[in-house]
Image (cartoon, rainbow over all chains, first blue to last red; front, side, top):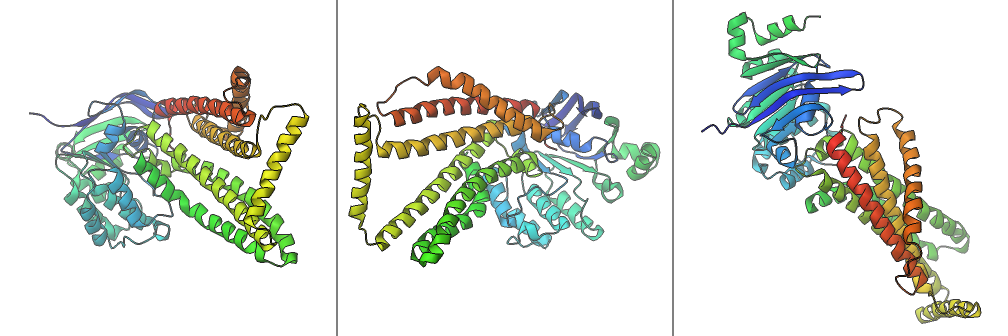
Length: 234
Length: 257
């Protein structure tokens, strides 16, 4: 029995005024895979992610999450890490934990406390007093403490120092459920490519490549990072 | 819904709690100050009451916009709730803070009046008699004009409060709707001026259509209560329209940037 869930984009286009952010995107993201959404700045990665999360409602085409348009059910299946801090400044880290516990049934409090401990973060710390990197780490701990069907991480390594990246990748890998789908948007490919099963290259809002990583390496004889540099050479 | 409301209230109480506390303390201390200081305190209290009301009103709108359309919106809109529930929780929270603010302001004024009265040697019983006399005076004035008793002092004060509350509540829903409208791809630039124009335009439309339709209906004998009731029905209809439009627009055109 195939009980795989998926996110499907069918001819999805999105423009901001005269700027075309996505153009006829057709992709299928299935559970059981770690997928890299790769592309330079302004290629449409965040727009795709926002559509999946219901943050952009006005677009052409269809985006289906487990067969339905983004709605409250799909939101409960997705654990989303935005590319910037999104908690209110008055909160302490533990307030955010309480918020997640109250609103998401799949949130694992004990796991989150363990992850915070590994990341060296005190739950009594005020978010206002955290650095950008600390905020990203704590948000990652929150997001990875859910037992979701889809994990969508937008630039999870963006504001984190190189020394902490290995730890972050370890946390992502250890807490990723194999029956779920992990979509990671990034342009720090060399740091992260070893964990990808599949990659999607986005260029000017169009999907220029969607392939299994192993196949890509065998076909080209190059790493994903090298292929990326070749495709997006300025 | 209750969980969302709890989050809303927790998020806002820090903004207001200290202001309320200072105001109430000021109301308690003011009557015990010297006459010279009282001459300063009383106008300051009057001004601060108005300032608190205005700041709470603006703060609620600013918080709404921040939590819906800035990076905080990433959290609000990815919580597993329908847009209608999210909006309802924000609206209920706004009403709740408005009611709490009005209660605090009235409470402060009552405390102040009571303390001033007691300090000047007038008992509570005498104060009550004074109010009864004022009521009797209104009745006498109405009788002189040849009217049957169509309102009382009590109905005049309470209806005034209810009318103000109704106006503020419907104003909130209208502003929330406009904030949602101007944060869609339909309006990409000049959001604030367009929002202001829309506010006055929609208010005028509601006034033109809503008020003439039911303003002459008499539901209760007391004219003051009747006015509050009629205005309450109008406000409810206005809020309902704005809420439904907001939910429709949010579900189809929402764009968090």
